[in-house]
Length: 134
Image (cartoon, rainbow, N blue to C red; front, top):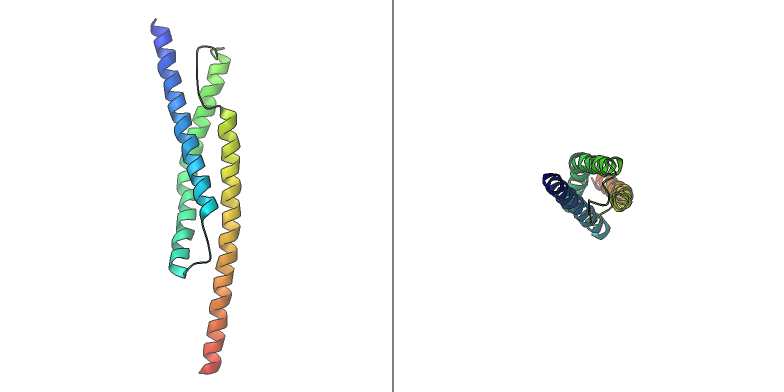
């Protein structure tokens, strides 16, 4: 019937969006866990910018998608249509990975700040040595 087809299309879209979001989250968790911070200042500055971009530009967009998916799942529950809807990814799984991503970002921000402090201290020491040499 037309209603079953509509539910199937809705189900497929939710499933696709949920899989895409979960893949994006997992990919970024992997990237954040693999980054090394003790590097030359140019690469460090690029990494700082990448982390800022992730947090300030990408995360808000993905958070909107996560909220939209949450609303979709709630609508399905409210319509008592869980039996007619098949999704491979649950909202609970997305939330669990999202929390992991947020923890990874916080950990990396702390690591980046420590590295920035270390670089700053090295630069200050170099400046003092240079002043004494002059």
